[in-house]
Structures are given as C-alpha cells and as structure tokens.
Image 1 (cartoon, rainbow, N blue to C red):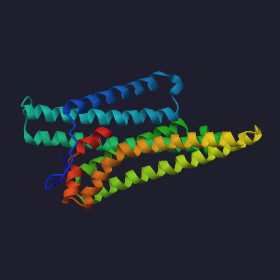
Image 2: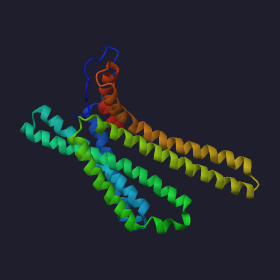
Image 3: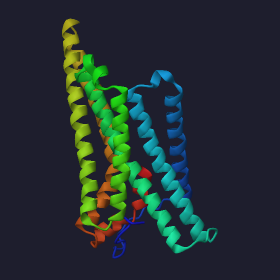
Length: 266
C-alpha cells in the first residue's frame, strides 16, 4: 500500500498485468508450504545441523515470513472489501504497519542470507582446510541473530519513514550491493574451479574437452543463479528506483500499476 504511488496520469498504451487474487494467494500458500518443508527437513535431520544448512534454513524462514505476510495482508484486504471484516480504521492502519514491517524485514533478511550463503561457499572453496575453524556454529548463530535483529530494526525505520527518498535509495543500494557481492563471489569461485579443472585435465591428458565442457557448465549454472535472482527481485527494486526518479511520469506510473506482479515474482 505504501509503495503503489503515482498510478494516475497513464496513457492508453499502458499495459497492466492483472494478477487474480486467487492466483496471488495460491502462489503464496505454495511458497509457504515448500519453505515449511525445507525448515522441517533441516531441523529434523541431524546430519544437516551445520552452518551452511543453518543459513539455508534461515533463508527458508525469511521466505516463509514473506509468504505469510503477503497472504495475510491480501486476505485482510479481501475481507475488508467484502464487508466480512469490520474494524476501526486506526486498528487497520496499525495492523498494516506491522505486516509491512514483517514483509520488509523478511525481504531484507532473505537478501542478507543469500549473501551470507555466497560468502560461506566462497570460504569453503578458497579456505577449504580452515573452513571448519572459520565458519563455526557459534559464529554462524551470532551472524544469524545479527541479521534478524538488523533486518527488523531497519525495516521498522524503513516503514516509519517510507515517504523519505533516502529510505528508498538505501533499499535500492542494498539490493545492488547484494547483487554485486554475489556476482563477484560466484564468478571468482567459477574461475578457481575452472583453474582446478584445468590442472586435472592436464594430468589426465584431456585438457581441451574437459576445459570446454566445464566452462560451459559453470557459466550456465552461474547465469541461471544470478539471472533468476535478478529476474525475481529486480522489478521490485526498479519500482522503488522509479518512485525516486520519476514519480509523476506517465511511463513510470504505468510501471507502478504492476506492483502485485513484482510481489508475485519475489
């Protein structure tokens, strides 16, 4: 509700992709169920009680919170519009603020855990012999607590001061920083793995075919990882960027009309 700004003054050419409420709720419930399964699988299996899987579990929890918050907010809006839920406007506003803090906090924590997972994999490759002494469970727990506390704190500030340009700039900068971090780390890991594959190929006298095959597989995997990340998160942060750059321009107003589509992608 806070971010769907300046949706007037659009031209007749404006394309608005309508997301049915039923589809929106269904996707949210599917995401909720699959993230619950991930959390259960990691918590129940003792073999997965390691820092890496702890980060993955927290990522699933973050995405779980996104799903719960969006489904809850959509359900409340539908009930209010249908007249099935009648309450005071002040209470609705307070509830909306709480849900928005949960949505923003879970999105921020989700991006943080994606970055932490990339850092964890980087350490496991470049500091393989010291990995278990560097990434310990106590350190992982402290990092997890720090991310959750910081996410809730900053999301509260973001929602409280949502109409300030600096808040939107901070969110967009944070997204770009996470994207750059992941790209740099994964490209560096791919380069190291490629060099390692070259060494093995030279020993096995099959340098040409192994090098080409590994390069193609690694590049394809990296493209898929970063491509899907940018495809799913990019439109939402593009929306925030355009609110800062051109809040009243007809083209930007047209893009604002598809806000629900960006939430579906996330």
